[in-house]
Image (cartoon, rainbow, N blue to C red; front, side, top):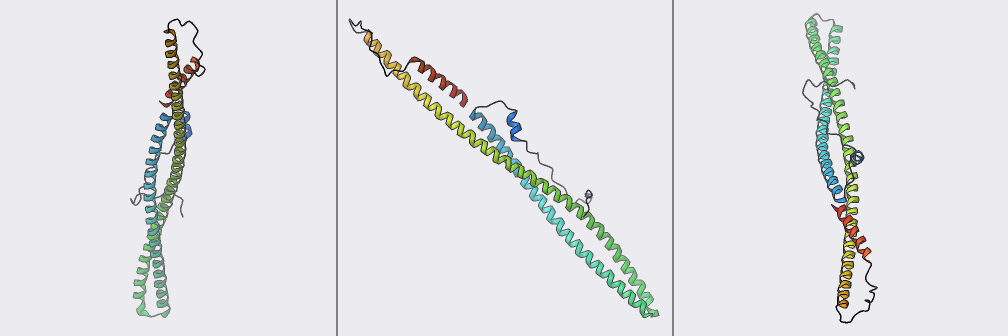
Length: 243
């Protein structure tokens, strides 16, 4: 099979345009600033949709290229069968010519001349068949190379889709963990705020009691005010991460 570039002048083959090569996920992520879990999920979902669209295009192109390869294989087989028939016919004509020549019959000269003309036409057709076979083999080789390239791009696209899904799952778990932490911090802040409010109300009541000069009894269950500030800071930080 020839390795030269195929002859596209007959219009039998029009290779599909090469789909956009899929960029590396790692290189995309390294060029971006850190995002919150929600922002990263949105980005990954967008990239996954784009990868799925590219994969669908590659599937269509690969199927179309498979059809071209199958058609060229069928055409090549038909041409080879035709060539075999031509070769058999030429051998038969030459055998008849040889038999007539050996018969040394004077009336056979005209017949021999006619058979030689037929054999020459068959030989010319055989030469044309051989040229068509060579062109078809070249187109088939190029079509198979295009199909193999599309297969490789498809494999790469599938791999990236798997990676994106894995990253998306990781970010979803991280977002859920952050939301749980935020809910816990909000609950803690509410509890501390309620305790502080109750302590202030109790202190106001004791101050309003006539003759009450004794210092208010300590309230062991009330957390220190610093805890409120720490919890509030945690809530603020988690809220910022969720944005």
